[in-house]
Structure formats: C-alpha cells, structure tokens
Length: 592
Image (cartoon, rainbow, N blue to C red):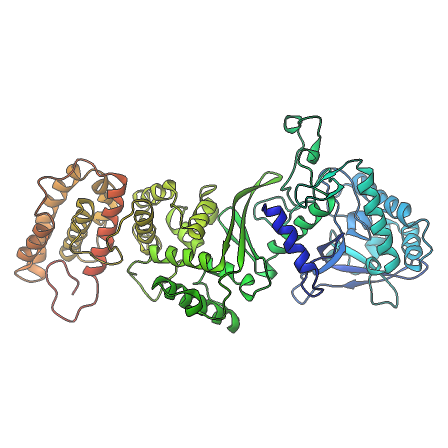
C-alpha cells in the first residue's frame, strides 16, 4: 500500500481517541498565542494571553487552514492579526486592508444568516473594529502578527468550538467540495467522492517554507495530461487529502516524538497498531545524547541492551518480552524542494526486522574507541555525518540526499553510499589537526570500517588491531603510525608539523613516492630517540617495521580507495595500540 493510504489509516486510528492530539475532520492544530474576548455587542473586552511560561503559543484545534502563498485568503474564526485586526509588522497598509477585508467578507458571507449569539457578536465586532484602535492595546507588541481566536465574554469555549458555528463550517466545507466540480474514484481510499483540486500543505519539514510545502502538487502545464489540471491529474478525495496531511503534520510535531531529522531529511515513524514503541523508534538514531527525563533514560538503556542482544543472535522476544516483534512499522523520509516536498524513501517492516537492521548497523560501526569516556558506543547518525563528511560543526554542510541515503542504509541493511566513503577520505586529506578536529578519529574510522564491511564484504575483524592482516594498505597504515611515533619520541610533544599533518594523505594514495622519504626522515628520528629513550630503541623499531613489510617486494605505486580506507584503519588501530596504557616497560614505538 502507498504511504498516503497508511497515513490515512493512521489518522483514522488516532482520531478515534479524543486525547490523542489528532485534529478531527475539518480541523487543524495551530499555534495560537492570544484570544480576543468580545461581548455580545461586539466590544473588545480583553486580550487573553494563551502562551505558556516560556512565551510559547498554545496548540489548538481550529478550522482547517486555507492554502495561500501570494493570494489573500482568510481562515475561519481564527488567523493572524493582519487578517483579524488589519495590523501586522510588515508595514504595508494596502496589504493589511486587503487581508482585513477578506476576513470580514468571509465571516459576513458564512455567518450573515445565523442567529446564534456567537455569530452576532463576531459580526458586531468586525463591524466596529478599526486598525487604529490596535495602538491602545497593552498587549500590542506581543500580539502583533500572532495567531488569535475569539471567545465570548463569560464563556469558557472559543467561538470555533460553538456547535452552531461548527455546523456552519462543516456545511461550508461540503459546499467547497461540490464547487470544485469533479468527482471520481480516489486513488488512496478506492471510494468515489469529491476530488481535491489542491492539497493542504505540510508543515514541519526542516528546510521547507515556514508556511508549509506540498507533497502532491501539479501547477504547471507541463504536468497536465488528458485535460486534467492541478491535482486532478492524480485524483485524491478531499477527505483523504485532508487526512494524510493532518497525519503528517501530527507526526512532524516534535512533541509527539515520532520524527527525527538527519541532514536535509526529516523522517516520521508510525505503526499499524497502538504500541508503546511507536513513540520511541526515533531514539534509535541517537542513543548517545543525555536525557533529562528518567523514563527516557530507561528507554534508551533498554534499546541499547536489545541491540546488543540481537547482535548475539538472540530473538527479540528473548531480548525483551515487552516489545511487539510482529507489529508493522512505517518510515517516511521527506526532504524540502522549494515549495514542495520530495520523498527520500518509504519503508514498511516489522519491529523485529527494523531493530535487527539497526543492531547490524551499530555492529558494523563498532570499533575500538580512543577515548571511551567521551566517544559514544552507539554513534548517532547525525553526529557521524557531521564528523565525517560535513565541514566540522556544520550539519547543514552534509551533501544533499546523503542524510536520506545513510538513514535508509541503517534501516534496511543496504549499502553505504560511495560518496560518503569518498567524502570521509577527502576530509582526512583536507582537515587540519586543530585540537577539536583530528584527521582520523573514532567517527571516521567507524564509518570506514562500516563501508568496507557492507560494500566490500570484509569479513575479517576490524574492531581492533589485527596483527595477522596481510593487506598492504592496512600494514602501511600501521607503519605510518610507527614512523609518526618515532618522530614524537625524538622531538617530544612540541612538534611544529606532525607527519600525519603533511604526509598521511599522500602516503595513503601514492606510497611509492612518499614512504622512501619518510624512512629517510625516520633514520634521524630513531637515532635521536635512541639517545633519549633506551639503547635498543633502533633495533626494536627496525624489527617491528621489518615484520610489517617482510612480504612486500616494493611499495605500491598507488592504493585503491578501498585500500586507502584500510590504510586509515591500520593507522588508527596501531595508534591506539601505541598509546594504550601498559603496566610493563615501553619498547620502541610505545608510549612511556
């Protein structure tokens, strides 16, 4: 089934529960900051501040938002102050006159024949309000450009909650559907009904327009066929369009904990049945960040233990009997594309399969840590991308589409993009060791290892130093670490330019050109270290290097990209071994 169909099913399931937070049909959840309290005669009695202690607006169910970009269209019984009061912060009086007129015209047309007290009070307010009165309001600074609703003095409900006005809104929506003038079979539900000319906008996708973006949209003649204009090209009923957009907006709300952002991709998660895991799946992408809530910390620890158990081949029921292994989960990845959204990927799988794929992902990334107290056992994907392929500290610099591709690889067990592997090698070549960024650190070594395991089917253990590894790239990386250590032993900590800073990129790509020069430098370093360390330093150093290069007839002219990755792993592993704490006396190339 399509993701639109599953989103509609999710909406129906959630809408059946009044406390779920899913808006009813014809309503949307909007951020409302103030309520205008009016009398039955239409006088503005007060302005009620609905924000919380942190000045955040309150989330309310209000009549569905209209789709507007540059056009002037008013919402029913709520809107921003530019429409409701004719005042906004843009300073364009001609525009606010149009928006205020649109708000007044809509309500006079829909409420003109209604004898309900709420309708009469609102029309009386609109008939006597003037924008000049806004300057006299005490709340004018915070009120400006905020979304507002109405409430009748002495009542606790808002005007849009009054039964008579809700009936008017329902009738108006049905009238709008008929005015579209097109009926057909809905591709989502399979039922006959009014077809939506345009679909509501989706809000909450990172990087998209703040006013919302369209998931289904046809607005150019090039997209039209058989005389079908706009969304009549892909017939979806107005009800299905409203429901899938409402469900997406719900899922993209961070309060519901069913969304996560990786680079430019926003992912939403949901299940086909109400299970506790539905709101915890996003935690799989970040098991390292600290949690303030004790319940959240407990959930993260449970997920970690489950992933480790699955790694050992244990079934999900044995790992945690409280989980629901057979429940189907859905994952939809969305990315911004101007005023539209593009679908990065769509996955449907059982909980057990998803958890097993995540367990395998972290197993592929698992590698010896340099600083166990500071480096996470389960590296978050956002941090992995930030530390490997992006400009350091700038997550937005991750290449487009890579966030979605890596997320898909994590959830499906698929290949890691070749571009990610090439990018991490490029960062190693380009970056400078500045105290915060290291050319080869835990995250970069982990990604290289995962790439070799997944894409090149590397079966050998690469979690820690493999003394039996015969690959020339891996061995040359180990040799480079020994050469760098000899330099450090000879010159101390205050080295102007460590070998890795100047030569590691060239040494990993063209060993035959670089290593002879490095060995000439090493003769000086070893001789000096012999005087400051111990008399047998040169003998042990030459012995260790000789063992690593015993079978090598000559240095390779070039190394493939894969062997360059193995070079970096060899350097990383050997470096960790050299600087590991030891109880016995150090020998050549080891830390005292």
